[in-house]
Amino acid sequence: MIHLDFIDTALVVVYFAAVLFVGLRAARRGKDTNEDFLLAGRTLTLPLFVATLVSTWYGGILGIGEFSYRYGISNWVVFGAPYYLFALLFALVLARRIRATSARTIPDQLERAYDRTTAVFGGVLTFLLITPAAYVLMLGILVQLIFGSSLEVSVVIATAITIVYLKRGGLRSDVWVNALEFVLMFLGFALIIPFAWAHFGGPSFIRDNVPVLHLTWHGGLPAQYIAVWFFIALWTLVDPAFYQRCAAARDGATAQKGILVSILFWFCFDALTSTAGLYARAALPDLQEPMYSFPVLAERVLPAAFKGLFVIGMLATVMSTLSSLMFIAASTIGNDIIGRLSKPERRAQNVNRWTRWGLLISATVAVALALAVPSVVKLWYTIGTTIIPGLLVPLVSSYFKRLTISPAFAFASMLAGWGISTACFIEGQLTMIGTSPDYLFGVEPMIPGLVGSVVVWAVGKARAAEKKAAA
Image (tube, rainbow, N blue to C red):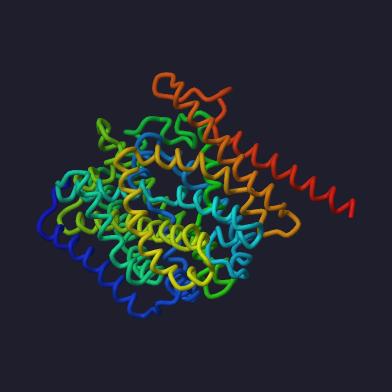
């Protein structure tokens, strides 16, 4: 548990109150139309777009602290560089195309390009991909550290606070709260570096007190392990938050520029978190639970009030992602699954109400997963490695007319990608060697899943070419 003085606790309470105030006030500005509730009326300006995308995409702060403590600056290679690369690709290739369509969500795009069956299956995979269990877990852990409550109680209370304003204002409330949290997350981590420097010393302290491999690009990790995380970074190309923000942007140029600017902010925030992680490893070499490296470092170097601001920075980093993913998961249930299985007129009339019910369902699933799999990095790995191969090929190809295939093959490509990777993952978990899964031929499950999806897509393209030639 972090020891907080009265001023620290007061600042944390004020933060929670500010989140609720901003979220509920933003809700008053909106209208209860489907377009406004789901996409904030498609009016996001560049500053709001950047603030909400940066804060949404960088929520795994305890996982980053854990990884930095264990493997040093390779954190930047594993969780930084590949995401910059794929975010750049997304900006240059997809951002304007997404804004130019009428689709609100990924399943909307799948139905526009293929058919309803593919869209419903895509909706299920999207829900599994976006379910914010890892962020529910991190927020619960932070609340537990601050207030000393049990993990179960902390998880439930933190999740409840997050969804209150979403139920009222939808994406508009989420975006304005994200803007507040964007400022606070940078403020919190910008504070801890100078205090750590003053307390322990500059770069020489880190160099002299961390393992040598912590200052190498690979951190001692095997090449295949790093390569797998590059594959997992493909998550960017199927991430519903990217698609939602692009669809909600004022225009295509705003979406494209916004992602490019966001990459610069992610780079800066990675610099702050990686440096803090190295300080934690150097100053706290015997820490039993690396997930707590940032909170424990704050306890060691920050005085009253500043400690409270840093805790708020961690909370803001997690809550910004949690609220966004929770709302996307809810809209996937309301708009993309229940709505798509209903008659068009009922869907138009009830999608907001179904999405609000989706918030409760999403929160329940996320809390259950967080308590069942209490490891942030393991949650990221499990979800990413099984779901991404199903969505990637059919979704990205759907934005290019010459790359689309028939609905039957699109569904089969999605099923093959998800089914093969999931089967390989389960097989590896059932044949553990020590604490490591024994995957077939030593190949990570995402790779055969992607290969299977591409093969089915290629067959679909060949069949389409044959039919065109015969005609």
